[in-house]
Image (cartoon, rainbow, N blue to C red):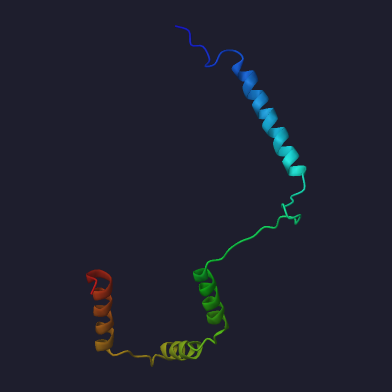
Length: 107
């Protein structure tokens, strides 16, 4: 059994001519100046959604906010290092239960 190429022997020539024609067209478009009908040159544009602008604005506010927890963290580190840091066990148990309810039970 002999398998012949689709489209016959001239198919490769047509494909090559198409590729050459496309490449020439792309080169001529790349070299041509970009001009709008009004005569202005094209410019790249982006559009940022209202939500994205809001997220950016909030991120900038957060970056500018002072780190108010730095002092509290320093105090806790100092207490832990000196051995005076203590958390009531009832408070720890309550937080554990809240976490279980929120993350595992969906309550």
